[in-house]
Length: 425
Ligand code: GAL
Image 1 (spheres, rainbow, N blue to C red):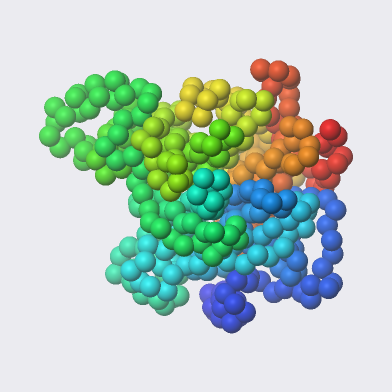
Image 2: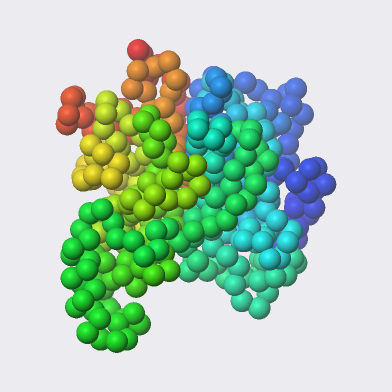
């Protein structure tokens, strides 16, 4: 999409209440879906393609809600100009536009001023405070135009991912409006509950060089240093990086933020405090040097699972699934959950069916289906960074290979499917 069209689109969107993307159709003419059609344009109740990328999902008072990045057209859409868009549904096929739950700010001094990069928003409910709590990945605007409200400046700013902060907002009602509270580099000055002795020893080793923090490692050396916790120790005083993230609210009332940290090399799982707006100080370093992004947690039969990806930016890569007995426990990788013979180089398998690109998607959420036993749905993004608003959603059933303790969650490509055909119980 040409830049000119992007601005026209934005002007129209703002005139329509600041919440709308590409052209809608008369809602009376919108068809009702009775199946999922992964990768196709997916219309909301206004006849507009659902605009909730990097989404999180929650079930509340009998309805499903998703919250995601509202994208504009073109590459401008990779910055956040509008905010976090919310939709609700009672059947998971048909989604009602609930509007913008968290609006980007017009105040140039706000941490969420328009043009900030705001990604992967997730919402959980806190039964103690009765508040809905949203967390999101934030990358602040930087450079000489950082305070400009001009969309041309926002468009021209080079994406900069060095902020790596987790922002938090709260609301009294699920669909918002959410009030932005602030942001964190989590757990400054704290060691994790696992492997602290090794980190302390490595720190003593590094500190022999007074300039250790600016030390540059290359190739294998770099991999080794990151896995041992070099970036962790470098960021110890100021707090740990938090990029691709997700939330998980457990049934014992505890909640967690899981995020790509340490220059993306190591995943962190932080326990949230009782308000869910900060940290208890208990956290685990998971898969040191493993480069996990795009996390999505779910729980089945007392075990915790995480879908994730490798780190290749907007380009898809082979998916990953891991399991643990405890959120802050020992996580074990189970490999690529995608089944099917499609390999990247295959000329006969259509691109969307290729198992080694997660069917051209990257995980964003796993949605438990209410009223069905052990039924979960994989929700992923098929990013289109050149025209961000056109990004598609890959929705596939999670199936299980094997049984009992060793069962592995897997996903298979389907052009079209229905919940009742896959989940029988
Ligand atoms: C991906 C990440 C997205 C976005 C993108 C930017 O790896 O999962 O959320 O940050 O990189 O290149």
